[in-house]
Image (cartoon, rainbow, N blue to C red; front, side, top):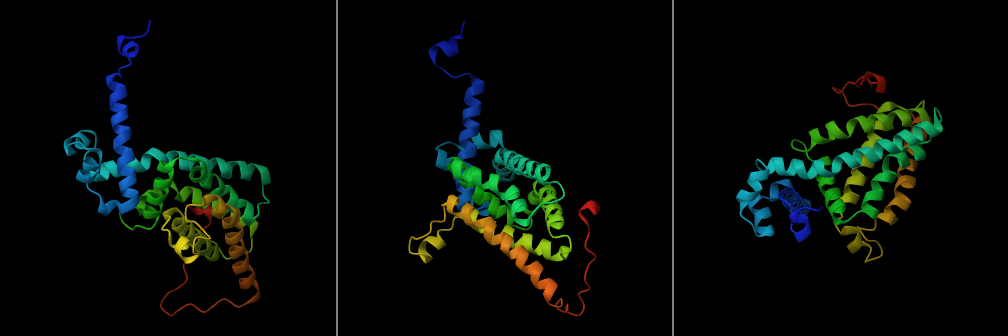
Amino acid sequence: MPSTAKASGRRTRAEQRAATVRLILDTAEDLFSQRGYFGVTIKDVADQMGIHPALIHYYYDGKQALFDAVFQRRVDYAVEARTAGLDAYAEEVGDHPTVEGALIAYYDRAFDVYINGDEGWRNFGRIFAQVNNAPGYGAEKMDLYFDPLVLRLIGLLRKALPDADPEDLFWSFQFTSGAYSLILSRTGRIDRLSDGLCASDDFEAVRERFVTFMSAGFNALHTQRRTRPAPKRRAGRPRPRSKSVSDR
């Protein structure tokens, strides 16, 4: 027999709590995505919801805790999706990956959530971009959640380009990561520059082009290094020994 609360259509306290927490996180996610971490206060979130800030403080011990909860809510799935992509590709190709295949494995499922997910996922994308470009409060999140995945990607790229300079591979990833962050930011600039021909929230158009463009950059830099002498490094900056993936 259903409980009285269920029979009457009223939510239990646990359901009410879950709904309140979800609304707090949704509202905070939206504001953080628009204004960044330093542009949002607990009061801003409360005002947006039409509640007293004390209710948010009841669930979260300050803005940092709230921001961490917003990030944590989606990042686990983001990591799982990329891990699954890398696992499947590594099993499929063994010791014979390609640059394009490795980048597809790393990025394709990430684009899926922005194409097929709700606006909350696209808001998270903006927050991810902020964190990825923020020394201090953001960098440690990348270290914790994504550095192991990046090193797995670098390992695949080293198999694809076994005679590539490891330094070039890391710089190439840095360029790729920067472009990816700009895409997730959805600034609207490309909309204005192209007079509406392109849309910054058109993730399908991005996915059709992103890996092709980026893999060409990896391969072009590698080819250039093989045909031209390496540039001289500036005095006073000795070249560090590149760690292998197994060293990390």
